[in-house]
Length: 445
Image (cartoon, rainbow, N blue to C red; front, side, top):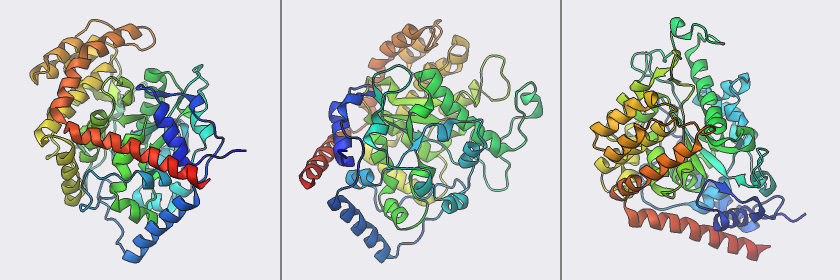
């Protein structure tokens, strides 16, 4: 059996992928992969360097997300290393909300994640056959992997527009809110874990028409080691977050309202839309249906609360567990965006667009349409106020019409916000790295 290197796999994938979300399965001919001796040796040297340097373990704050070395804040990309370390999990390992094991995985603390070592036990290298097999949903094409962006800690019970802080209880819907629900929760973290998993499931099934078990996800708590020499190497590379955002087919934002108050989440959300093709609406999805209260449902957050959080978006005022995180991330923002105010405007516009697009009814979209008008996004406000139902199954033409209407203003907002030359070079550098690595792998076999 012929086995392709991961470099050849990824380079082939990128060279043939269309501008949309779906990647042609026929582009891949190999049935597996293994790293070349040159790549494996390169990675071992990097890990050895990290060990010899005696780097300290990363500090972890309330959020649980390890902080980034503030000395690595340039636009440099470490794509070869990122591809060598790439591990993925199957989608149902994150989205099967009725499974206790999935909810347990999503609620694990940093210490529990270190003990579990999901990078070695749950996440895995994916063969070409697995990654590119056509979905069972009837398509003859295959999706790539999705980047899962989420807040580690739940919302605060004091103010659900922000994350929980020391001494506070996490948000939990009241007994009255949960009255009539199939399952009544008394554990706030269990509720948060289930809402995350269910929201991802609903985004994939409802918005994309594909079962999560047919997908592969990159999720930080499993697809990055939480300690040890590879962890330390990844920490020096800002955990390859930018690289994996660039490499992913789509980013799924798992959005409780406080998602948009978290610095890391805001950066991941805006960066995906800043670097993806502007005419690819599938590049970013918002998984929030199990968090929000639509229509007569009362056990979630009112849609208007989301609008309140979006109104207050500010990367400088966003929540970080450590000040070092803030400084590191602001340096990344300064590199990719024309200004921090430009980042804020773009993130606000993009969030209004994406949340509004996934609301079925005019009534549910109303708070976002009102805020868009208030912020001066007139064409977006008009599109969100459409009387059409945005049901991807029953009325896909309405969503297509919405996309067509907002594409020019989205393109204009993005051009105004980003450093176009730098973003273009990053995308080009990604292509060049794939091609160079693929050529090197080909010569080594």
